[in-house]
Length: 564
Image (tube, rainbow, N blue to C red; front, side):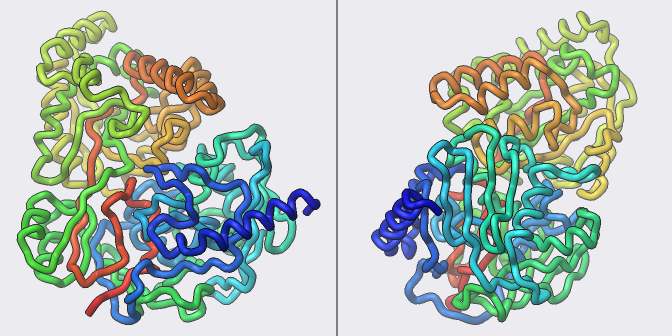
C-alpha cells in the first residue's frame, strides 16, 4: 500500500472505532440502510476488530431452533439455485465475503469473511482483506483462492452452469488473489458502489472451497454434504422432511452461533401442514404462511408475526422459440388477457399480493400506482384490454386461437390456483387452449432452462431492487432467468444506458423507456407481486423480518437465540 492509501486506511480505522457502538445497534457501521441496496458504504473500512454479536444484551446460549419452510431442494448448488428451498436450509453452513446485517432486517452491510475493504476513488477496484485462520468444515483453511474460485464461477459460469446472479457482476473484468488473504475485484468501468457491494453481499453468494469445485467439475448440484465455513454443520437430511444441523464448534466467531442446533422442516408455502406445525408448537418459527394463520397468531398470547415485501415476480413465460410466440402481438394479447385484480383476489386467503407490471411496484423506480391503474392491462374493468387483445391476435393472423399448448406449472399452492384461472382467461378471451402439467422444483427448473414447454408459470427471484439487477437477469438476451428466450436488441441497448447512467433523473427516463418497450413486446407476462408472512413464538429472539426485502439474505441463524 502507498502512503496515501495507508493514511486513508488509518482514517477508516479511526471511523471504525468512532462508530464501534453502532455495530451493536441495529444499524451497523453507520451505513444508511435502504431497501435492497446498502447506500453510503465507505470507500475504505477497517473492521479488523469487528466480530458480530447479538443485538440483545441478555442473549443466551443453548437450545435447538425448529423452523418450517419450503426446503424441497431441486439440487444442492446454492449458486445455481433460484429457489428459497436451497437457501432456507443450506445458508447456515456457509459464510459470505461481506454480508447483510441480520440485526437490522438485512438493511446494512457489515464485514464477514472479509473484515475490511478498500475501494479505489475511481470505483474500479474493490480490495478485501480476509480473516486468517478460518476453517472449512473439513478442516482446510480459507484463502483468497477459494474466494476467487467462488466469484469467478458466479461472474462467468463455466459451460453448462447457469447462475441467476451472474448478471450482477457483468462489469467485473478480473478477480485476483493478490496474496493468501487479499482478494481484488477489478471492474471494466465503474458502477455505483452501493450496487457492487450489495451484489457481493447477496445471501446467495456463499463462499465455497476451490478444491470442492475442482473435484466436482465446478457443478455442485449433486453434492449434498458441501463443506462451508458457516456456523452450522450438517447432521442428517431426510428428503422432503427435515434437515438437522449442529453448532460448528470450530467457527471463527467464537461467540456464535448461540443455539446448539437447527432443525429445518419442509412444508409447502401457505399450506395447512405449515400452519398445523406452528399452531401445535411442533415448530418455533414458520416462513411464508397464509393470512388465516396470521390472524390466529395475532389472537394468540405469546405469538407474533410480520409481513414484508418479497423479492420475486409471479409470471408466465411464452416460449419465444415456438413460432406462435415469436410475434410480439401474440404475447401482448396474452399479457392483456390477464385480469390482474382477479388474480390478486384468487389467492387472498393464501398470500397478500399486489398488481404490478415489469418493475417492482413498491420501489422508487416503479410507475406510480394511480398511473399504472389507468394503463390498459392493469385496470379493474378489463373491457379495453380484452378489446385490444383480440384485435392484436387478429392482426397477427391468430384470431382462431391456439390449441394444445403445454402449460408447465410449478408445484406451489398459489401457482396451481393461478394456472387454472389463467387457463380459463386465455381460453375464454383469446381461444387459446392449454394442457396443464404440474411439476416439482427439479423438473420445473430443468424444463424451464431447456425450453421444454410452450407456456411456463411460476416465480423467479432477484437480489436487488435496482433494475440493473433484475432487468438484466430476467429480461436481457443472455439473462440467466430469461425463460421465455426473449431477444430485443433495442432493450439490451437501453439496459446498458441504465447501467451506466449516474444521473438519477436521466436514469429513470431510461427505465421508463425500457418499461414502455416491454409493454409492447413482453419478455414475460407479469401476474402479481407478493408479500411474505412469517410467524413465531415470542421466545424466539434475534430474527427481525419486519423490514426484509425478500428472504434470501438472512438465513444463517447465527444471532438467533431462545428465551426458554
